Image (cartoon, rainbow over all chains, first blue to last red):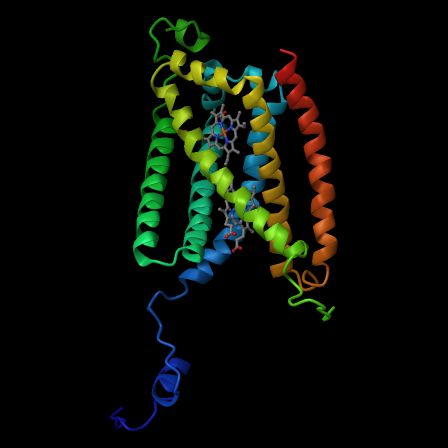
Length: 158
Length: 125
Ligand code: HEM
Ligand code: HEM
């Protein structure tokens, strides 16, 4: 309870010991396990992205007429189904956060001046927020009949 | 394993080049994704605006760039699996060179059929 300040508290974990007795100062920046979680996330999201992105490319470029089949009506057909909406939403968030985290590492590796680093990271954060907000809104607010004179079957039946 | 005649074991070997290529492909896909979400957002503007940009995707020069993008995605994904295997599989580090060849073979097996199909669609339409 009332340990005197000169004693080392061996119950407080290795840092409490080393901070007092070690000549080396390994001061934690208080970021906890952030880098460990980010490392785990890169691997977990990578495996999921493999399925999501390969599936996306296969359906959009290989099936049907390939790239020539991709137009507004094609998108309307896919986003009529909650399955593809969910697919795209997951792919959007995982790819953007995975790519964001990867580029963050790269900026840390190559920038020497703090000012350059903060400018690049500012641009990175701004672009990621734009992509996530816009991409999410587009999936949720998609309207196959934006054009009042649309000839798509979902619209002519109204 | 531990013989290095000229400096490190790592530099200039498969491990280093795949690391560089993994970085470059990752950044490339990330930049594409930015443009891609902006162009997809045109579906909220009007069907014509969206179809207009999609017609650019059907141009043969852009078609070749798409094949390049898909090559980057296939490489990054397979090499990503190799990185994960080296990290999590006990024997991963020992087999990392063999896995490099597995990535190379997997790349050809996936990319060759894709390129044939995609470039046929792009050039014969
Ligand atoms: C040339 C190759 C590509 C073509 C032709 C293409 C085409 C499309 C199309 C037509 C859509 C509309 C919805 C849908 O079809 O599901 C879309 C959405 C999307 N694509 Fe791709 N795509 C390509 C490559 C990629 C790659 C490599 C990625 C991942 C990095 C990706 C990520 C996405 C995302 C996240 C969305 C949803 C966008 C949003 O929320 O507004 N695409 N893509
Ligand atoms: C398709 C499946 C994918 C897999 C299996 C995968 C896997 C990985 C792995 C394992 C790493 C290494 C992380 C580390 O070293 O800690 C990584 C890094 C990275 N990935 Fe992916 N990834 C995939 C898709 C993507 C996509 C769609 C993007 C872009 C939006 C992307 C961008 C990056 C970037 C920029 C890095 C950082 C490279 C570096 O630090 O050298 N990846 N990826």
